[in-house]
Image (cartoon, rainbow over all chains, first blue to last red; front, side):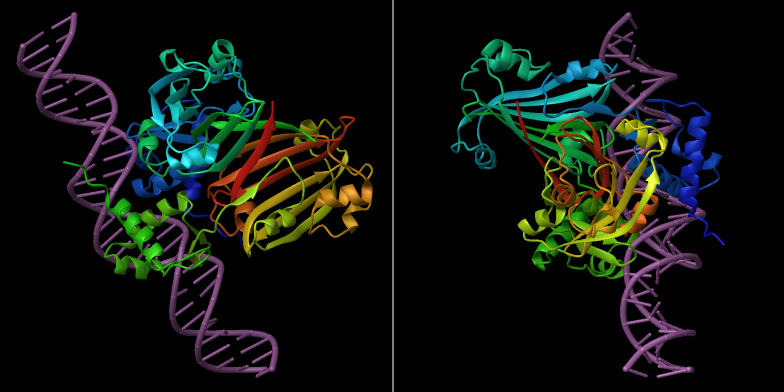
Length: 237
Length: 237
DNA sequence: TTATAAATCTGGTATATACCAGTTGAAAAA
DNA sequence: TTTTTCAACTGGTATATACCAGATTTATAA
């Protein structure tokens, strides 16, 4: 006799069926939790367990206190290329948007100096940007750029590709990158900026770029929603 | 007046403090939920919310119905190299173990044939392996190997590096790899094999390797626990 | 000594209920 | 028409309580 699965997993399946039956698609809103709980004859608590399950699977997502929505297809993303986020997104038929949340010249804190092989308190540009696809905020990006050779970068419009600016205006181009990637919960400020609860699943991506002479160009880290991207990398050898 | 954070987040902090105060370290077990709930004067339900938060952050992990444990440091892992899992792990001072769960010669199903550019129903080796670090099961790996040029692979011991076997015994070596990486919930069989609940956060990693002539060598996918690894990739250009 | 069965751990699921806190949109005021 | 205010909605947090289901240990029988 097959053991029956728990109620919340059965409910999960009912929700999946219902979503496909109703032809709900990318970014469509689900009814409120109280409505769903009634419709499927269960408690809100149990319903939320099923919703959380689907959220973990990347089927639906929530926007802070606004409700549940159907998750759009993942964005393919190659962290070893720098054709620019906006271009990337458009090539896949989505609509990008970038907000520069802050830009300032700071003195490199110790952790950053260590990572990048700089002396403590070296001046460095710090950009914080929020990037959207189809008006859903997908990631928060921090760029720390070595000001050597690109003085005045901060006065330019940074809502598009930084690398494009560096290449076109300052003739700077990365020759090698060290990339680190791992799943990490999104917390605190970052969570707020992305309109998710602290502790939401996310993907952390860090990149250190050097020029041909081995000089430090840029340190960057990105906090992505867990269901938002698919990394694609090609490697030789 | 600063808004006070919810009880479960305060509790989260208390737990963190308590863990560090008690000097709990890698793989140490936490007291049972009922004990903790009493100690911190809260309900088991609220306590579990705090524990789930720490789990999402990768501070603690649970082993199915056994209890909560302190998460070990992440394993660094370069998916573009193939020095072999076991060697990788040992280099970082951990103890690896690999179990071959199954190995068989199958006929490539459609999805696989498409991905690898094969004809439908091409014969192909299928290995399923479970890999441990310090006796914690971290990932389930599926290898689909093109039998051309490595007949008899299935009879060999596959608890170490497949690539090492292919290189040493069959003179096969990959020239290029296409890698896909994204966060994905661990469900069903895979969850069972890893001793986690269905829906646990995980990282999915897929690799397609070709030889110098562009011939298909191997398709591989891996399901990792979300808190188990840190991907490290170096890229030129 | 070993194998088996039962008791007792542990976390997992489920229900009912209340209130809190941002979001939203409608109503009221400017 | 525009702004402001406020009611109502939504999801988020919190407590209390019960029972279920695997895992582990202990006691018992072979």
